[in-house]
Image (cartoon, rainbow, N blue to C red):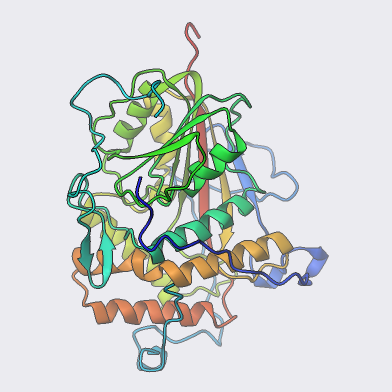
Amino acid sequence: MADSPGGKERRVVPVEEEEASGPNGGVAETKGPKHAETETETREQPAAGPKPGQEEQQHEAGGESSTVAPAPADALPHWTQPACHPLQNYEEDFDEDDDNDSALGDDGASSTASLSASILEYRTIHGRTYHSNIGNAEYWGPNDDRQLESMDLSHHAFTLLLEDKLFLAPIPDDVQKVLDVGTGSGIWAIDFADKYPQAEVIGTDLSPTQPGWVPANVKFEVDDATLVWTFRPNVFDFVHMRDLFGSIQDWNSLYRQAYKCIKPGGYIEDFECSVVISSDDGSVAPGMACYDWGRIFHEAGRKMGRPMDVVERGIVPAGLKAAGFVDVVERRYRLPLTAWPADKRLREVGAIQHWAAQEGLEGYAMYLLTQQLKWAPERVQLLLACIRKELRSNKLHPYAWVQVTYGRKLEVGE
């Protein structure tokens, strides 16, 4: 496939090595939550208390209930008030720098589009480029270098959050065929192919923005996962998805198609992030741009008919079970959004994710807010500038929930 525009090398933000101090050597209790994860076979919590290093969560109707603490006395002003308007002084600091044994079926009416001039006719909206009008033209994420770099940074943060794991599903070491749906920059597929050189890895996406120099056992195809899949039945050992929130109208249909294409006994895993910026100490409070971010995105998702509140509604575990997957396991993690945790690893996760946000915030917001909510671009920039200002203030201890869910396809005769 063609190189990504500009062909530039992705970078990872360096992180200071000093260990921050906090009570009990962990995350400072006054600054927010310790890293925690929960694992459930269903969406309800087990009766037993949390394991060491874990925190129990309460779920209601597939989501979770929480109470926001009162805002601290020195909280920043409402982002729409003049005291919070940083636009005149704000300056963005961006660096602009076949295998014959194909998994595709024989049906000529394939939804996989061949690379052609029309695929490369990207749309430009308010200075950002988006995939062509072929397929799902409502997809809201840009495909330019700035956004791809943000995605690569988030990939490193996600992998570090999972303790240097690319996935959690218990797939065998001799895995043979793997599909990465919505591969984006292709970085997950490339890392997987490097780790499992015997596996054939296919990454699909709406745009051919993946690099040209890749391991011999990985290939990328232009495809729209919301259309009918034409991969042969029972062909993949593992299907991986990540951050499809806001992209899917019918999640149950997506998982049913994946079920059809997975071998008996094979696995599916979906890694989804909440767009809600949370805090446990009330530092992210009403009136702040960070507080409003999730509400704004949820509204845009409702207008598109493609939900953004995938984590809150428990869409993934419910959808996997409805498709027929068994042994469904859900784990939730707090993803720090800045380098506030005392824990060294989580502080690095937060530092990388903060850098990713600096690169990617505009791309996340510009299409959705101008095209779906009809905001003026200047209003979008005001929101983004205020969020950046709040994240740099050192008064916040923000995080977003990450949900990793995997399930297994039944064996024959099981």
